[in-house]
Length: 371
Image (cartoon, rainbow, N blue to C red; front, side):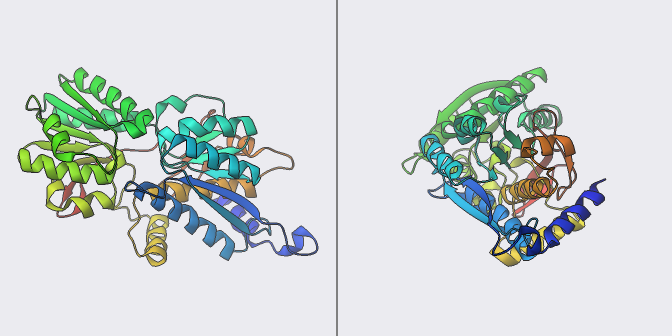
């Protein structure tokens, strides 16, 4: 089934301009929303790169149904009000769909606008469970963070014998971090663990990481779990290692990019990280994407690039397969399953999907599987 849909997409991509009548065809507009500025912009820039690569490849193959793709990129500045403003701008530009946003906090703010306009919003990295199970126009190609939190809690308690944890969470992405914290604590308690302290902060250029690390170590927890961006996780790990070198550290999947390793260096060695993707995958589709991404951007792709590339490919395949006068949302729900770089993407009745968790540990500057 997946092979047949892939062939159908390739046929659609290869159709000539003759399908669109005389003159140059009108571009098919897609929007992208992500945090592209500021210290924590890695998630947004990597996501933009994934979308951009997919669009460039589609245009090189002839566009969609003879129409070239135009990507309109907007910076939400990791601010909900700015997110609403740029979403309105994309809706006014009459985009066929919006890729993004990249954080749960922005998604919570802008999803109602997409619903009101009945324009599909396809996120690649939004994992809050607050948007699950709703008959709306918000779709995503990953699951919620619940399973990541569950597997990390279970691993720490049952395989590492950890009984006490302190959590540090960035309230700037509160829709994600507070929910992740709540789920982790519940699962950890089920296996005999106790969350002693939950330390909230709002990431800014003035964040005092030394003071934050001291708070995180209050009560001598066996593990400190960082529910933060990669940059904040790296800076906090450095301070925590200086104060208590032997304390076990873990992060939420949000931090699991190359930036964590790049900035953290030795301080993030042996840090446990649940990941969305398998960076050791030998699947041909993933390896082809990895080579193309490396050639285009000079960087190894992380989970934000892969998941938004998947999201863009799903949207393009759905557009290519739309029946006459069929809303894009209904096309996606009718077709249900799409090929992804590391396995099929299947949507339920509410546009939600699932993905596996890869529990990793950083060793020698690389993400390795936990043993």
